[in-house]
Image (cartoon, rainbow, N blue to C red):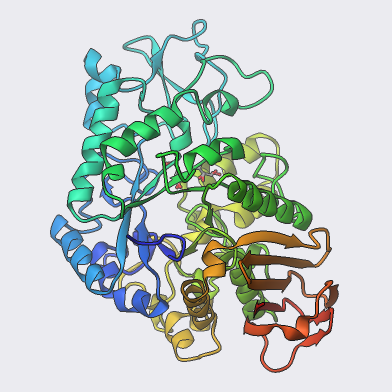
Amino acid sequence: MTDFRKSCVYQIYPKSFYDSNGDGLGDLAGVTAKLLYLKELGVDYIWMTPFFVSPQKDNGYDVEDYYQIDPRYGTMEDFETLAAKAKECGIKLMLDMVFNHTSSRHEWFQRALKGEEKYKNFYIFRKGKAPGVPPTNWESKFGGNAWEYVPEFDEYYLHLFDVSQPDLNWDNEEVRLEVQKIVRFWMEKGVRGFRFDVVNLISKGEFADDETGDGRRFYTDGPNVHKYLRELNEATFGQDEGIITVGEMSSTSMENCFRYAGQDSHELSMVFSFHHLKVDFMGNEKWVLVPFDFQKLKNILFDWQQGMAEHNAWNAVFWCNHDQPRVVSRFGQEGKYWKESAKMLATVIHCLRGTPYIYQGEELGMTNAHFTDISQYRDVESLNYYRILQEKGLQAKDAFRIIQIHSRDNGRTPMQWDESVNGGFTTGTPWIGVNDNYRTINAEAEMADEDSVFYYYKKLIALRKEYDVIADGDILPISPKDPSAFAYERRLGNQRLLVINNFYERECEFCLEENLDSFEKLLSNYKGPDGRSMGRIHLRPYESMVLYKKE
Ligand code: TEU
């Protein structure tokens, strides 16, 4: 059985990974072509975001047919080749399953629209409160009211995301059986992992107006999520111990995650939660510009680390994915200390208790997009909010600045392979612009430099396999209120690991009740001697180190 505690998952956004046929879109054959790169990095799983047939309104998170590969990404044969070749490289596949909603083009929804009761009952149709007034005031995550009116029925359907993504009705057993069939189909194709998209939203509670918010309290971690997850587990992946699962949990609570990812709860192997990535929001409001709150970041990560450990539940740990800006631009820096800060951020995450996830390009220190015009953006959410912010009275340039910082497209620019045109991603016209810095930040250059961010990630992945304390140890924050340092200890029996990071460019002094000189240094982003002296350490800009001792 794979020990997912010692594993590392690498996320691929196929559309932006590698284009094998010059049409400007990455594809499955492109992933196959780069397997040796991933093997060199040392990852155990690749999670690929959806490549099923889809109108691509939300880049594949709007699924039209769960059993077919979208021709833009290739064929079933390409998938089978990828699965076979990945296996030869010792890499397992994790697929992304979007079951909270389908595309409005899915046959089920099309038949629902034709008035077939069976399929109307696959979705959530409700009468309005009054003529022209939707059933509730809930807001869609992509902006606007979450209900769309269908004149033929004089009813509305619920879409927590885009209007083209109607929510499925999980209270209908037929829906749950269809979902099981799909999971089994991909298990039979050799898939060894599943990521379930926004899976804590599948069970809606009461359909009532939210007087104080956007409605999320009614449908987040809803009444039957645990029950439905256990049912899915028992009927599908739970039959095979080697399969790992991760649930994407939107605005979840820790108490619920104890159960979603509890060792004995028979739901999922682990969870993604996002609270630590809202520290540059204003409350839940993402579309504002505020500096990140370092203290809050530490508090949230440490609370989750310790809480989940106490309840024998397991985290996925990560900074980046296809919905997030690039972490080096967000919490590190792109300037003089680009490399040091990228490595420091990697250390913070990879030594935590949980399974680390790397998002494509993160291991190269890829940065935000730096687009200069709204026409360069592709993401439905960014385009919607650019409009909404202006409707709310912002000047176009101010709305644009917010999009530049928070857009999901920051993470979706093509992977930078080499210094050739388009960073070697495609010989055609890329579907979204390549970041200009590909001439300096690219895989080829980093693989030729043993001091690169790439090799640093490789070392972190290997350390987790070598040192049980990283996979299995307890977690103890060190001086959690320190204004500059992000430091913690991992402990397992007589093994101790100290992870000390300066999160800022300013130098700092850090003190511990400990003789640091007695620890062996396993890894650092600076070469040569460091500033340790008994129980004190002087940390240089973004300095990061992993110290180890067996007592
Ligand atoms: O994302 C869920 C989600 O709610 C967020 O990450 C969301 O994109 C962000 O909060 C908006 O600010 C998942 C997928 O990862 C995302 O790509 C999809 O668009 C979304 O579900 C709908 O399927």
